[in-house]
Every structure is written in C-alpha cells, then in structure tokens.
Amino acid sequence: MEKGKIARLTDRGFGFIAREGEEKDLFFHSNELVGVEFNDLKEGDEVEFEVGESEKGPNATKVSLVS
Image (cartoon, rainbow, N blue to C red; front, side, top):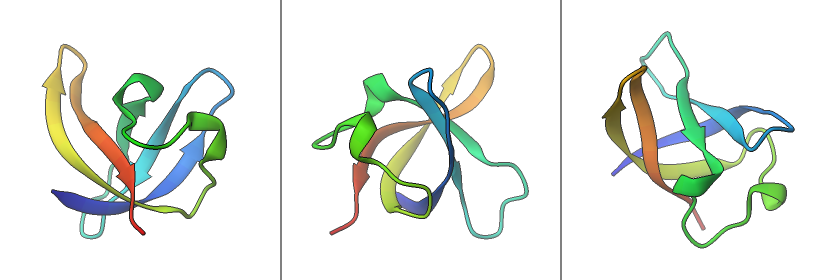
C-alpha cells in the first residue's frame, strides 16, 4: 500500500491524491473508497491506497483513511 494526501476533491464523486516524489496527482473515484464515505474526506487527509491501471492511466484503488 502507498500513502498520500488528498490534494483535491470535486463535487462529482472523485478526487486526486498527492504522492511524495511524484509530480502528477493520482485520480481516484468514490467507488474505490474503503471504510470511509466520500463526503467525509477533506483536502489534506492522509490516505492509503493501491495503484491500478485504467484506460486513462494510473489511478488509486482501495483508498482508505490513515488513522
């Protein structure tokens, strides 16, 4: 599992995670959240996730809050 911080959230059910050492933020969709609701996330929250691949490139899967 990798760690990062919520960089941006949209009102359309997706957001982006900033990863240390990476220029580009990683896309995630609310369907990939585990143990947390999208509306409970805030920018700056620390999260754990796995990196997956989609047709549009890398994305975060199995996203959960770090407690």
